[in-house]
Length: 506
Image (cartoon, rainbow, N blue to C red):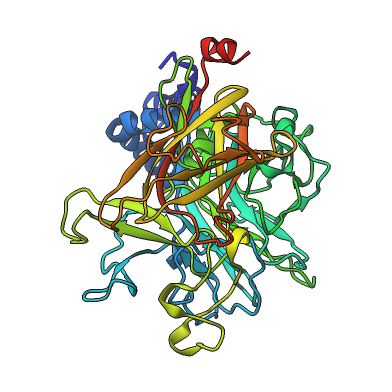
């Protein structure tokens, strides 16, 4: 128990073993003084019994909180609301970079689709979504007594950090959000664009975490809480994060004080008496230290490094990471070479990036069966926005799987530098049953005669990324006077150009 991660466990054990010793020393019928109260004896006995049975679980919890994080995925059952409508039946992404207006649902989960049996151009949701993805959003906390709450175990420190992705539903929203820790007074989360983390400034306003502090928590002490003083005089009265926007996903970071030893509950709501709405919020993360930011970001956006020491590439899992579509037609598609859905390891692709037309021919005149044909944009405005947590500053090659019968192009843009983009055309496979794999490093499956970057043919094979989170926008551009759209694309890997390759380019 000498490990620093176990300080709270050790303190609690010391406290209750001390109480047990005092009871045993005095006996239940002391010669002088009061007889130990039955309830007090039960509390001590229960704690020690619980500790003996669960000490390894407590230690594991403390290690996870210190070395990484606890993840609490959104649970619709923990959302109390009078809203009755379900998310639109045709949605797949459920997170959009364009305004959503007139919505009457408060929860939406990412949905994977497949081709409808007997139809090559009509799609339907998978019957069993299972745990394919954990991406979901709380769209609204409007209404009397509407709240979202979750509970987590803490056997680490009395302070911790809460993280969660957030954004606006529409640009005109006047947002407000507050939370309670263990039933204490609500603490307001202030949204202010002046709150900037220096390490993320290089990526501009495209990425997402601003440092936050929280107020003193007056929650009651639990019976298993360490009996030692804790000062909160240097803690602010509100949590500050940058203002949410529609076309960006940001990650809130809030310092929690006076955490209980054991179970803790956080409850979100909108302050009463204000004409405001909550921002959209996503999955919750708890850590006992603020040193685990990158681990949280990598999980939120499903980024995986090629190695822990000196990584040189990062892979983005499109299905599992938070991202934004600009149009209702953009969707996640389960693909297998024969289009049979019983194959053991299907590939998941994103379709309807760029181009024209609507999935399932849905348009604004169709409003039946809870289908919504908005947001609605086409051609180069029909984008996919992802986030790449680059391990280093530099130029990165892009590799990924794709599906298209005819030649189509992809354009990747970031805000790392002005006009930083790369555009190239991938080769069609003459059918919709064969996956290709493009790689800009060696032009695999790339039509070199038609590729371009920054408007100049074959000028570059790479895109500039800054160390940390980078907002990357993907779309397609005109080809021979038309915009057929991008190919369907799968997971993307960004690989740092080596110093040798950089020297060779000079």
